[in-house]
Amino acid sequence: MLKAPSFFSGIGESLSGSFLQDGALWTLQNVPGFPPIIQTVHILGIAAVMGSIVLLNLRILGLAIPSQSITEITGRVMPWFWIALASNVISGAFFVFGRPLRYFNNPVFLWKLAALLPAVALTLVFHWLSKRQTDYWQLSPGRTWTARVMALLSVALIIAVCTAGRWIAYLEYLEYPLWSMEPYFDGSEYSFWVGVENWGLSQVIAATNWFPTLETIHVIAAAMVVGSILWVDLRLLGLAANRYPISTLNRELIHWTWGAFSIATVTGLGMFITRAAGHLDNPAFLSKLVLLALAGANMGFFHFRLYRKVDQWDSAAAIPIPVKTAGFLSLLLWSGVMLAGRWIGHIV
Image 1 (cartoon, rainbow, N blue to C red):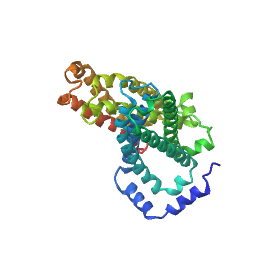
Image 2: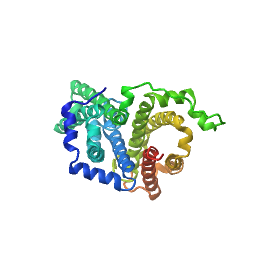
Image 3: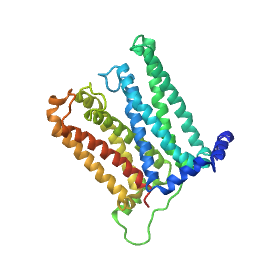
């Protein structure tokens, strides 16, 4: 049986029955739709982290945004990272304060903090050293390699934080990783989608720790999709990277967007087949499909219609209204996709 240290459990006991718990519980229980909404805010915060620190780390490793210097991109993404971090701390606090005994007695929550605190400390150190001197990390081979090691460690810690965050609710899968499930059959002819639920692969995913594993990868990939799209959308709206050509930004990020989207699609299908019939009766799931289609249509309209005239506004300070509208709709629709995704588990 996995257990948290007694000191950690003691924190949960001290918070239990406090005004913090009372306030968090009242909000979670009385504000309509608040749990999935605040969970969506949390995941969008993760997306902002992916679009800021993770892409910065990928730049340091030479894997993304090669046209920007490390100094330039560091100054550009750090404000967004701190906003995202504050958002995640506040949104996560509602659930931690609402059920302190559940969280502080859960070793996976401890593992999340054990990865989160070093990740934040590493970011602080990197940012502090970057501000000491222009192009600090490029002035010597030793500093360059140090930055790369820090980037690898930062990516690993952020992935660990996201993984632990999803596994907090799946502690039983760690204690009992192989469950057993009997295929559903009541003697009558069942629909195609119920048949899908009874595939051998569907049963294996649903009955073992493959399900939380797929969900973890799905959330990380979805956050990377939104995080990479966020760069372009904010540039289209004139809210970030205004001196950076949109065509270059789009070209350097599009492969990360599609790569992450492919992973999110495969893992999403893996989860879908475990409850195919139920999902197709779930209005949140159907809403997610509609929003995905609209987001895809908006992206297609931007790339195949508006983007044809990119030379006219590529580096312009004043972006045409239709282009700004496409950027705004993209932010709105992808946020809606994330919200609908969180609602799926709240509708039975």
